[in-house]
Image (cartoon, chains in turn yellow, orange):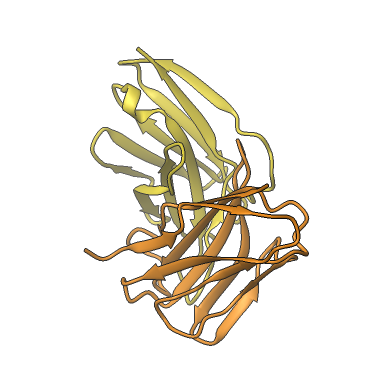
Length: 113
Length: 114
């Protein structure tokens, strides 16, 4: 997971489809994970988080799945809308003491009407 | 409302000038961070501070400087030594324990060299 200047992969979907954005994290000791949404020209905003003692967590239209065996995190967005078009970042941390978030590269989601 | 404020939203710098980007938070967060984002790319950590009067270099600190004299404030100076400063700069803050939303980000400052 370190974001080191790679250009963003893009996922294109049609409005109403379900979207799945994937993220491979780097540290098997990470125990806290977050998904952020960044719209163009704005700062990232929190979407949903999950701790390592869970493998699934649901929010409004979003679900995060965590597979610790293969160090994989995914964000599922149901009934994708044009307003969901943005860049999505995953982030990982060990939530003990002070630990910086490590951000993934990011995925650009494009939703067509 | 509690939040984190970056100013200005847009900033233009001439070659050889130092400029300072402001970041203020009223969330009572201990930690603050500065990130750089280039077009179509991810977040790169410049500097971070865990506590007042202390800060550490991130992955791309060369050409930047920071101070943390107050808990609420973490200004970033882009010096003339930064050869390619045109980018989108994001400030963030967090509690020492990251659970509950992790970082809160500001709305960013877009810096352009003219």
